[in-house]
Amino acid sequence: MSKPLLLLLFALYLTATIGYLAHLICRRTLFAKIALGLIFSGVLLQTGLLAQRWWVAGYMPVTNLFATLFFFSWALALIYLYFELRYRIRATGLFVMLLNLVLLGGAVPRDSTISALIPSLDTPLFSLHILFSFTGYAFFAMAFSIGALYLVQTRLQTEMLPDLSTLRRINEEAIFLGFGLFTLCMVAGSLWAHIAWGHWFSWNIKSVWSILVWIFYAGMCHAKFIRRWQGSVYAWLSIVGFGIVLFTYLGIGLLLESNHPLE
Image 1 (cartoon, helix red, strand yellow):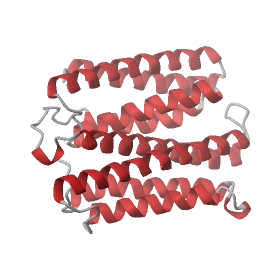
Image 2: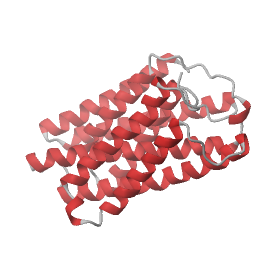
Image 3: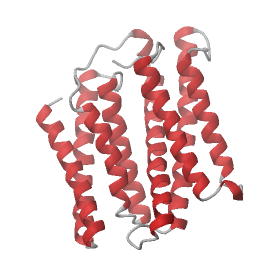
């Protein structure tokens, strides 16, 4: 991947983040509109880079740390645009794009070389598994950002941020959509494992923690209907849940031996 284009992408998202910060401080909608335009431009550029890598590789090239961070960043930016266009959340973009910058910033210095695909991964089920997995992760990241913002808004009660009711609705929707996609990820992964290795589930640490992620967010989908789990408690659960996601994604992939290593 071209390093100048990658740096341009980072600059677009960074400038958008600064634009949202200026909007929050100066209370001028012009800054928010400029920031949104920059994010649109960034998503278009990132989509083109992903498509180019896919074309060159002949498969969805999301097999190492650079590629997963890059795809994660793209999915989160795209999901933010969905919620922005749906709810007009503006300054909320500051919180989401800060997280996006961390993801993309982790990818920029890494080797972007596309490696050969091992035979067990050469199946459409692998692509579906990855697509559903990281898009689900991105929805959980969105819920994490909104949960943190909910806790901030409970103290500030500022008109520059969405009201608590809207934040709660966005958080619940992000959790629900993320859980649905992660469920599809688990189904595709089970089918892929059965075809590749002859079993539907293995007790390796990555699979066990993936099940724990699924159970946690299944509980959150239920918790939205329980009054005592709503509001700030639900926001804290969104934050804790994303911590579990990060450990499952990065902690196991980088620190422990599993069948999902990150290099």
